[in-house]
Image (cartoon, rainbow, N blue to C red):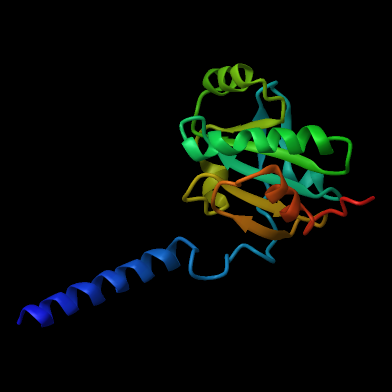
Length: 173
């Protein structure tokens, strides 16, 4: 009786784990890859409007993040390094902050000396349109507006980001 109960508990735990992993996109290929990125218009911290469709012709790195997210904080310096190094390339790097105030985000950026462009998704609607469920989530969009890669985890280094960027831009030119 005890052996059967333990076996059922283990099998149930495995089944639940597989269901959760699949629903989070961990076990299966990300369904967004190969699809056109959903258009959006958001305000930057400086009050400028950024519209994704107006960026067609340029590859875009779109990073969904929040100040309150420790993993987002850990990788932000890497995005800043990439932005500083590649800002003269035909590449748009955009941080999309989710559900935080302009004051909070601006204070965080200033406090850490970050200058990369940040848009404010104050109601989370853009994140929802991309299916963002976990932070950080980063989308690599090619010059035609097609999502080529999705990373739902923090980056460990600047080089990790650069390696993924090679899917959407020739960094040797």
